[in-house]
Length: 79
Image 1 (cartoon, rainbow, N blue to C red):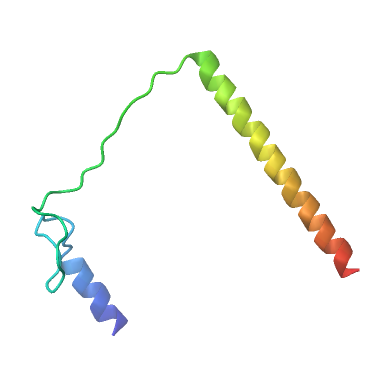
Image 2 (cartoon, rainbow, N blue to C red):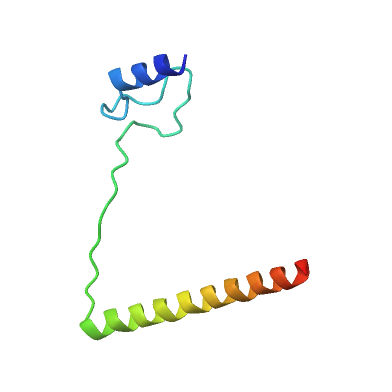
């Protein structure tokens, strides 16, 4: 039964064609249009980028430290 579902999925993928919702589903939009993502580029100076990366690394290290402390507390509670 699972293979039949996979075979049907391979035959037709409704995401390829813009045909609206599946049968029996009510469309909330007034007209059917493809929902296409938009991409915006932001300009960063090199120092801005390094500053954001440093902040990310610091935040990640703080999260890992909190996880380590929680793990150690859980281990000491087991004893």
